[in-house]
Amino acid sequence: MGFVNEKTKLNVRYSKEGFTIKKLKTVVICTSIVLFILLAITFFEYIFLRLLGLQYNSISALLFFFVLYIFLEIPLSLITNAIPKALKSVGIIKTSKGWLSFILNTGLTFLLIGLLDIFMVNIEISIQGAFVFALISGFLNWKLSNDDKEPPDATSKEFKEIGNKYNS
Image (tube, rainbow, N blue to C red; front, side):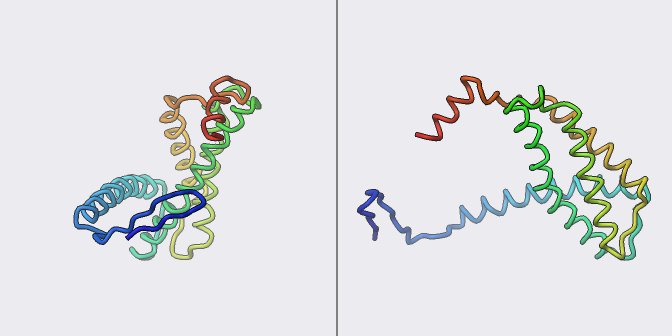
Protein backbone atom coordinates (compact mmCIF):
# COMPACT_ATOMS: atom_id res chain seq x y z
CA MET A 1 0.00 0.00 0.00
CA GLY A 2 1.59 3.28 -1.02
CA PHE A 3 0.86 6.93 -1.50
CA VAL A 4 2.09 9.08 -4.38
CA ASN A 5 2.17 12.84 -3.93
CA GLU A 6 1.59 14.35 -7.38
CA LYS A 7 3.41 17.63 -6.62
CA THR A 8 6.73 16.10 -5.61
CA LYS A 9 6.39 12.59 -7.07
CA LEU A 10 7.44 11.15 -3.73
CA ASN A 11 6.61 7.51 -3.10
CA VAL A 12 5.89 6.67 0.51
CA ARG A 13 5.44 3.05 1.51
CA TYR A 14 3.78 1.96 4.69
CA SER A 15 5.33 -1.06 6.36
CA LYS A 16 3.13 -3.76 7.85
CA GLU A 17 5.97 -4.83 10.14
CA GLY A 18 6.08 -1.59 12.09
CA PHE A 19 8.26 -1.83 15.15
CA THR A 20 10.30 -5.06 15.11
CA ILE A 21 12.21 -6.78 17.89
CA LYS A 22 15.50 -5.84 16.20
CA LYS A 23 14.57 -2.15 16.28
CA LEU A 24 13.46 -2.49 19.89
CA LYS A 25 16.80 -4.06 20.85
CA THR A 26 18.69 -1.24 19.15
CA VAL A 27 16.67 1.41 20.97
CA VAL A 28 17.07 -0.36 24.33
CA ILE A 29 20.83 -0.82 23.89
CA CYS A 30 21.42 2.79 22.80
CA THR A 31 19.24 4.14 25.62
CA SER A 32 21.05 1.94 28.14
CA ILE A 33 24.47 3.17 26.99
CA VAL A 34 23.40 6.83 27.21
CA LEU A 35 21.83 6.32 30.64
CA PHE A 36 24.93 4.50 31.89
CA ILE A 37 27.18 7.36 30.75
CA LEU A 38 24.88 9.95 32.35
CA LEU A 39 24.75 7.91 35.54
CA ALA A 40 28.56 7.66 35.70
CA ILE A 41 28.96 11.42 35.16
CA THR A 42 26.27 12.13 37.75
CA PHE A 43 27.97 9.83 40.26
CA PHE A 44 31.29 11.68 39.94
CA GLU A 45 29.50 15.03 40.14
CA TYR A 46 27.69 13.85 43.27
CA ILE A 47 30.96 12.83 44.95
CA PHE A 48 32.60 16.12 44.05
CA LEU A 49 29.60 18.23 45.13
CA ARG A 50 29.36 16.24 48.35
CA LEU A 51 33.01 17.07 49.09
CA LEU A 52 32.20 20.74 48.44
CA GLY A 53 29.33 20.77 50.93
CA LEU A 54 26.20 19.53 49.16
CA GLN A 55 23.55 18.69 51.74
CA TYR A 56 20.19 17.07 51.11
CA ASN A 57 17.23 15.92 53.19
CA SER A 58 16.24 12.85 51.21
CA ILE A 59 17.44 10.62 48.41
CA SER A 60 14.42 11.59 46.30
CA ALA A 61 15.35 15.28 46.60
CA LEU A 62 18.92 14.45 45.58
CA LEU A 63 17.74 12.43 42.57
CA PHE A 64 15.38 15.22 41.55
CA PHE A 65 18.23 17.73 41.85
CA PHE A 66 20.47 15.72 39.51
CA VAL A 67 17.69 15.00 37.03
CA LEU A 68 16.92 18.72 36.82
CA TYR A 69 20.62 19.60 36.66
CA ILE A 70 21.36 17.14 33.83
CA PHE A 71 18.30 17.99 31.75
CA LEU A 72 18.81 21.75 32.12
CA GLU A 73 22.58 21.67 31.75
CA ILE A 74 22.70 19.74 28.47
CA PRO A 75 20.74 22.21 26.28
CA LEU A 76 22.23 25.25 28.01
CA SER A 77 25.72 23.83 27.50
CA LEU A 78 25.02 23.35 23.80
CA ILE A 79 24.02 27.00 23.56
CA THR A 80 27.02 28.30 25.50
CA ASN A 81 29.37 26.18 23.39
CA ALA A 82 27.80 27.52 20.19
CA ILE A 83 28.10 31.21 21.12
CA PRO A 84 31.93 31.41 20.87
CA LYS A 85 31.87 29.42 17.62
CA ALA A 86 29.30 31.78 16.12
CA LEU A 87 31.25 34.84 17.26
CA LYS A 88 34.41 33.37 15.75
CA SER A 89 32.63 32.66 12.44
CA VAL A 90 31.52 36.26 12.04
CA GLY A 91 34.95 37.56 13.02
CA ILE A 92 34.14 39.19 16.37
CA ILE A 93 36.65 37.02 18.26
CA LYS A 94 39.81 35.32 16.99
CA THR A 95 39.27 31.86 18.48
CA SER A 96 36.35 29.95 19.93
CA LYS A 97 38.61 28.19 22.44
CA GLY A 98 39.61 31.19 24.51
CA TRP A 99 38.49 32.69 27.78
CA LEU A 100 34.96 33.40 26.54
CA SER A 101 34.18 29.69 26.36
CA PHE A 102 35.57 29.14 29.87
CA ILE A 103 33.65 32.09 31.34
CA LEU A 104 30.36 31.08 29.70
CA ASN A 105 30.59 27.46 30.87
CA THR A 106 31.67 28.43 34.38
CA GLY A 107 28.94 31.06 34.65
CA LEU A 108 26.28 28.68 33.34
CA THR A 109 27.21 25.97 35.82
CA PHE A 110 27.37 28.39 38.76
CA LEU A 111 24.04 29.98 37.81
CA LEU A 112 22.31 26.64 37.31
CA ILE A 113 23.49 25.17 40.62
CA GLY A 114 22.68 28.43 42.39
CA LEU A 115 19.15 28.53 40.98
CA LEU A 116 18.53 24.88 41.83
CA ASP A 117 19.81 25.56 45.35
CA ILE A 118 17.47 28.53 45.74
CA PHE A 119 14.35 26.82 44.38
CA MET A 120 14.86 23.41 45.97
CA VAL A 121 14.21 23.54 49.70
CA ASN A 122 15.64 20.07 50.40
CA ILE A 123 19.00 20.77 48.73
CA GLU A 124 21.67 23.10 50.07
CA ILE A 125 25.14 23.97 48.82
CA SER A 126 27.30 26.90 49.76
CA ILE A 127 28.05 29.65 47.26
CA GLN A 128 31.74 28.85 47.58
CA GLY A 129 31.14 25.16 46.89
CA ALA A 130 29.01 25.94 43.83
CA PHE A 131 31.67 28.38 42.58
CA VAL A 132 34.54 25.89 43.00
CA PHE A 133 32.47 23.20 41.26
CA ALA A 134 31.66 25.63 38.42
CA LEU A 135 35.34 26.62 38.06
CA ILE A 136 36.52 23.03 37.84
CA SER A 137 33.66 22.06 35.52
CA GLY A 138 34.40 25.03 33.26
CA PHE A 139 38.12 24.22 33.25
CA LEU A 140 37.49 20.56 32.32
CA ASN A 141 35.11 21.59 29.54
CA TRP A 142 37.64 24.14 28.29
CA LYS A 143 40.46 21.57 28.24
CA LEU A 144 38.30 18.92 26.56
CA SER A 145 37.22 21.34 23.84
CA ASN A 146 40.79 22.39 22.94
CA ASP A 147 40.93 19.63 20.31
CA ASP A 148 37.70 20.76 18.62
CA LYS A 149 37.99 22.08 15.10
CA GLU A 150 37.61 25.84 14.70
CA PRO A 151 34.57 26.92 12.68
CA PRO A 152 35.26 28.60 9.32
CA ASP A 153 35.08 32.38 8.96
CA ALA A 154 31.93 33.76 7.31
CA THR A 155 34.07 35.22 4.50
CA SER A 156 36.02 32.02 3.80
CA LYS A 157 35.63 29.76 0.78
CA GLU A 158 34.84 26.79 3.06
CA PHE A 159 31.93 28.68 4.66
CA LYS A 160 30.49 29.57 1.23
CA GLU A 161 30.80 25.94 0.09
CA ILE A 162 28.88 24.81 3.16
CA GLY A 163 26.19 27.44 2.44
CA ASN A 164 25.93 26.38 -1.21
CA LYS A 165 25.63 22.73 -0.15
CA TYR A 166 22.59 23.48 2.01
CA ASN A 167 21.01 26.01 -0.37
CA SER A 168 20.91 23.64 -3.33
